[in-house]
Picture 1 (tube, rainbow, N blue to C red):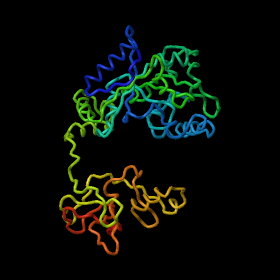
Picture 2 (spheres, rainbow, N blue to C red; picture 1 turned 90 degrees about the vertical axis):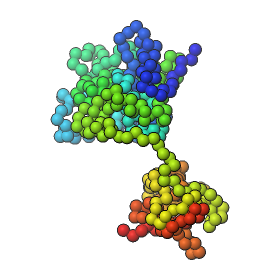
Picture 3 (spheres, helix red, strand yellow; picture 1 turned 45 degrees about the vertical axis):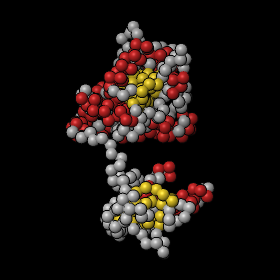
Length: 400
């Protein structure tokens, strides 16, 4: 029978039941536990930041990118911290880099299931599905180093033979030694409070770009995925806070306490997508063959008819766009769905995110505008607009 590697949950109770089921499947008679990793987006793969942002291992090795990043962090870190790894232990420095956001081949995991669930939902407003991954680190190491144990490579008292087993995954800087293909699991020494509080553990990617993703397709999968639907995120956040899992739990400092206190008193209002909506799309009257924006209710002078829309704009030099090899369709999009600011065009981060406001038709010599942007490119009505009237824009912003 094929093992189901993905399941959706809707409450903390569902989640804990699934975590218990995974534990019993993997370690029925042992005092071991899975590792967990929370990810804000369910569709994200298990890919460390160094590979996600800088390329494959071969590219990193060719450019010595990882070595340069490690070197700079180690040289500059001591002045910013009250503590530092003892001596020049590469593993301790590498763990510290990961916890403070430097790009590495490490992925954070935790032995605390609810901690991982909190990481999965804490930065999600319920706009998409989140996920918690579960991992069997012991079987992973059985495949990678022929030893079903997790080694803390920088801890005192670790046998030299075991230290050498994992040393291959973190060669000394600038030695240009190739690393193994498969990922491994390692325990860190608790050199920072966060590492201890978050019950942190790590996997280290080898050369295989998606080495952990492959574990889901094995005959006996070593990873499983628990999906948190977007419509359950808000309620699960509240359940976590009620269970004592909040920012101060995860980040035991004054910053974490401040965020925790603020979150405790957030009013959990239900979403109101219809609030502030005044317009809809219809075939344009002033530009036949194109789409226009129409008021379905009266809009008073000075009102912002697109409140709440995504107002992120990227500004690109016109000459840069002119120099690109673009299809006629894309060039038409740049013509129809952009703002102008001197020698730059403003457009959404991607044309796949066109909101209603980007379909405004421009004023012509025979058609006077009834909306225009302020200095922050937020459109407002320059006169009263009647229901059923098309919104026509003067795209030059109001002077400062």
